[in-house]
Image (cartoon, rainbow, N blue to C red; front, side):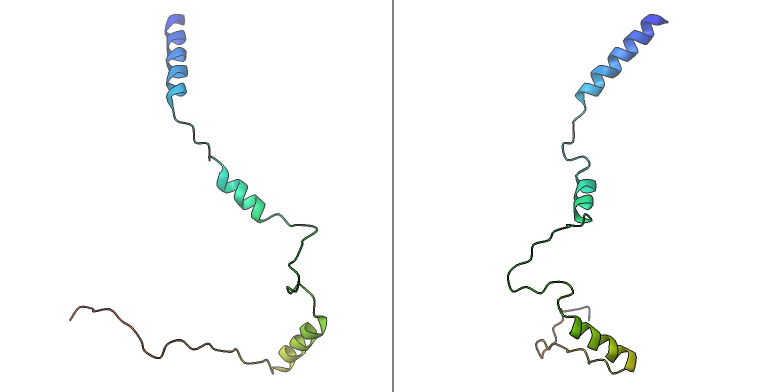
Length: 89
């Protein structure tokens, strides 16, 4: 009985040594954690808009929302023709 236990443990150890090791294991979790970490001292590019830079614009936007006079959304045009593949006939 003891011999079987030793042999089976030895075989398990040998088989475990042959399994490939994924060096990227857990990389997705580490990436997600890094993406969700808040930078307490962010550095913005020169001339870039920073969050909360225009309180006046935000206040006027909130006032327009309350009055129901929001600015219409600008639509961007694309090409005038529409494309389509050759479908079943």
